[in-house]
Amino acid sequence: MGDIGIRGDRIIKIGRLNSSPAQNVIDAKGLVVTPGFIDVHTHCDRAIAEVPTVDNYVLQGVTTVIGGNCGGHPYPVSQLFTRITEQGIALNFGTLIGHNTIRREVMAMAMEAPTPQQMERMKVLLRQEMQAGGLGLSTGLAYLPGTFSDTEELVELASVIAPFGGIYATHLRDQAEGITDSIEEALRIGEENELPVQISHIKLSDDKVWGEIERITRPVEEARARGLEVYLDQYPYVATSSGFTSSFPSWAFDGGRERFLARLEDAADFTRIKNTIIQKRLVSSRGIDRLSTIYIASYQHEPGYQGKNLRELLMELGKEPTPDNAALLIIEIQKNGGAQGVFFQMDEADVESLMKLEYNMHASDGGIQIPGQGVPHPRNYGTFPRVIAHYVKNRGVLKLDEAIRKMTSLPAKAFRIQKRGRLEEGYFADITIIDFQRFSDQATFSQPHQYSQGLEYVIVNGKIVVEHEHLTGRLPGRVIYGPGNTLRRTESDIN
Ligand SMILES: [Zn+2]
Image (cartoon, rainbow, N blue to C red; front, side, top):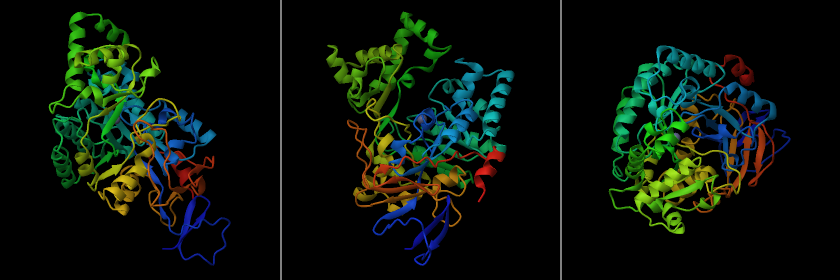
């Protein structure tokens, strides 16, 4: 127990400070004071310039978000950094550099290996983005066009980030039956380039592999024993969320959207596409009714579909709820511009077993939300309070200090975020203060647009951004630059 003295953006003293004069005093008696939460797996880059208050993260107690995950980042990243710096943001923001973005810039949607010239061009772009301050390379190997790349391409590209001290973060090629091979691919990319490896949103995403977490822990722990830095992150829910593109065979998108639409007109291609969707998404080895586990989160073409599952939708449309009809509906949705889905595809026991791993951190895999828009995954609003309310308090899966470590110092260590993630003298004053009994997530799958309760204060760089569950509107956040950007890093590190 003691006091925390803050001056400017730093913690300057920890201990007994009752004789020291202070302009503002927060009485945190009976409350839990922790370092601000760091979320290393977000897609906040997509809207952070438009919503600088980042409400749905700050109101979870998050003080730093990392974007650019799963292979996609805002290109060129220097433009976003400039805009954020000029207009201000409520929390700190850093970003990975996305392989899909770089590959699309150079090769569009080609399902082929890069020529030497294309490889050289991708390396130039990646180096440019790292020098602008990227934190590492992210891949989304189940997405387009990352799914068209092979391991050699990724090993070679990742060599660009090694001199900058970056991290390799990956959305694996396969999170189901092929998960061990996919993890080994990631480990090879890290090992050959001496890079830390972050395996994103870890899960066993198919009932065929439920209960088999050694498919994950065996390769990861062997690599850790060899000395490789490997980390996982996880959101605390049994449902995933993504677009429907990954339900399709990747070749369907070779060459881009026009070619995709043309293939749907070809009877043989259409049948192959439909059968792949059925196999990938709509049948279960355990007899689970998949149609009622897949929900539409957002769909611009027909907002009336939002919040409903495929079974409900087919019944409403007067169609029989069969896997065949569900596949036809998914194809129709993709034809009309695509939708974001919520897929219940994990087992609660696996979620808890994975959560206990000491090298696994908590992260949302969410993005910035606008209240009332769509029926998004509740992880966007509830990840951090849910870990504490449900997994620490109700279930006893983790002790509070262990959960906090996995939200603060562990992510800061993995992503080389300097002087954050701990309450220590000389560190930035990023602090979250919660009422432990009341701190809880309110967002549910049917009512996701709900902020947490019991969040007393959030302080970012020494400024209060949340007071008793409400935003103050201050924008004291900063860009977290990767070490490639030596100039700006020096600037923000000045004491
Ligand atoms: Zn992902």
